[in-house]
Image (cartoon, rainbow, N blue to C red; front, top):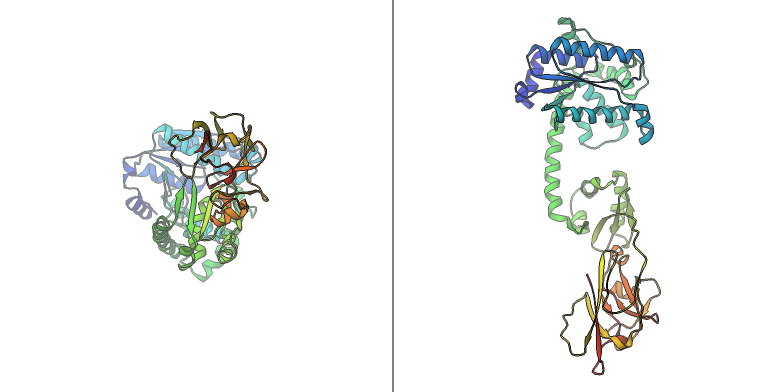
Amino acid sequence: MLDSFLTFINQHTPDLKRQPTLLAVSGGVDSVVMAHLFHTLGLPAGIVHCNFGLRGEESDGDEAFVRELAMRYKFPFFVTRPDVKNYAKSVSISTQMAARALRYEWFEKIRSESGYKWIATAHHANDSLETLLLNLARGTGLAGLTGIGPVNGHLIRPLLLSNRAEVNRYAAENAVEWREDRSNETDDYSRNKIRHHVIPVLAELNPSLESTFNVSSERLRAANVLLEAHLERWKTQVVGEEAGILRIPIADILGEAEPAYRLWFILQDFGFQYGQLRNIIASLEGIPGKRFFSPTHILLVDRDYLILKASFQTSDPETLTIEEPGATLDWHGAKFSLQVLPAGSSVHFDSRTIAVDSDLLSFPLTVRRWQQGDIFHPFGMGGKRKKVSDLLIDNKVNLFEKEKIAVLLNGSGEIVWVVGIRADERFKTTAATSNILVISFK
């Protein structure tokens, strides 16, 4: 037990003798043994304890026991008594999940405020194996098959190279006293069911189950690190981003091995589930326009790209009324400006700036989103009519961009400009134009 503890320190935290560690001690045998090891080796430490009050007098007894232990070892002692039931109800999670969230949040607060380098929990090899089996039963990827990691940021598990039997043997040999949590003996929790009924069967098949698992876990963890590094490099080469919108080339997904896993590697941080990947991949060779949703994002299957953007609601007005020339107005993040100039003035034109005959317009003008059925006379087509929807198809405007396309309407209702794409022929300037109206947006 002592050898495996020292091996962990040498492999993962060689500064443990110099940097103080905050020990999470519940009063059970695992955490008390961990505190005993730190005390015996003279490692600088403090003790934190959470009293959730879920077992009445037993919980208060645990707190008193841990407090006395800290005094005996001359370790600073920190305790909290959060209202875990109300917190669980307020965020709609189980009491177990709420207790875990509150516990680790408070541990980190004490660590950062009190000058500790590490937070140590007493998870050992059996805990890691139970976590793997729970993950496997619920569904997991490669990372979930690695069990509990030895180091995660400031969180360390210095007993991870030992198993439950070794911890109990150390406690007996060193006359370590601890508090027994009677809930560990019940099957009320999923982890207890695995501990009492699944692992004993596996141990019959392999008496060295924990040590075998430790080796397998180390190999799986290394494989996962290498895989993620490879996929991260690949992702930076194929995924483009502009103004918060991601563009993923479909050819680069379908042209690689395991396209579903590659795409999930990109989408997992945006709330998409692996179960959605089958339908997404099946849609890539179909008709463009299909959309998939996560709680926070929308994924559009376009012609050549998958396009990902955040989903949000806007409180901006649906229409913008322009009462007179000379105005500069905001609408959905764009600025529309209108300026009257005498004919012959020099104007710089681009897709975001047009010039029309001011005398052909009647105010107020209106800006709104384009609609199905909108028709105009595109500039340069000799007065021929065209549907705005056909113009957008000709210009290969994807569905997300279509949702943002606006039209500028004359006071009498005709389209003056499909904004950013094409002006209307009927309002163009000619040799007879006296005043031009320069309209731009950005």
